[in-house]
View (cartoon, helix red, strand yellow):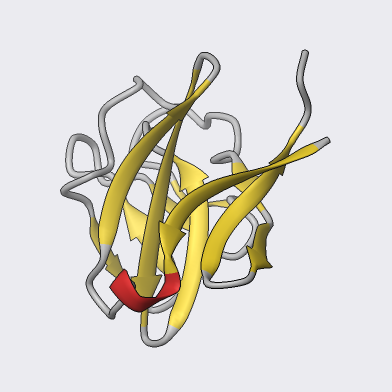
Length: 106
């Protein structure tokens, strides 16, 4: 596993959102109420981008069909149509002044 730096800690603030691509994965780094999360950048229901999604109360809500997922573990909290898989989440790692993720080279 290797450390992949995503952002400098000095650049993070509440309301921060930025999409990253590692290999074929799209990831979304965000900070809410002082907490940082790294989640899949698209909704697992129909792959709608989550860059403009509502975030609050520990969850993220897809703007397309209002599916809600836990920011902490990606669990589906609310579905408006058929159930879908959980939202992918990754544990953030810190190295010096950087925040990133440990990544498996596949």
